[in-house]
Image 1 (spheres, rainbow, N blue to C red):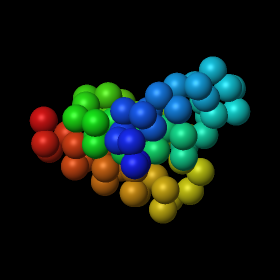
Image 2 (spheres, rainbow, N blue to C red):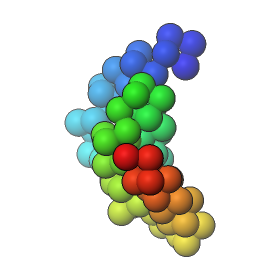
Image 3 (tube, rainbow, N blue to C red):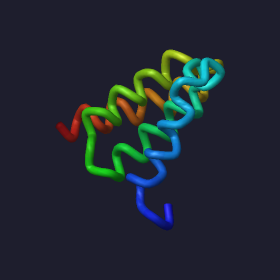
Image 4 (cartoon, rainbow, N blue to C red):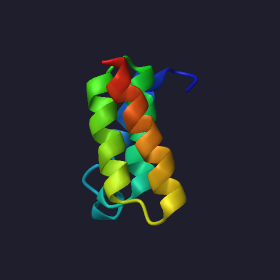
Length: 75
């Protein structure tokens, strides 16, 4: 975060083609967080939805659902 969310998003782009990451909720949740801080709430919402699809337990699902609802209410 020292260089800003844009720099971190660029680092994540290098991992997007890794099939191990495409099914990882953490990857999508981190991406969503960075997109939100970068001023792109629509893309952040899509990334939170992707993270929620890959959630493996109720606690993760609940947290991600809260983030989705929060962003939906902002737009």
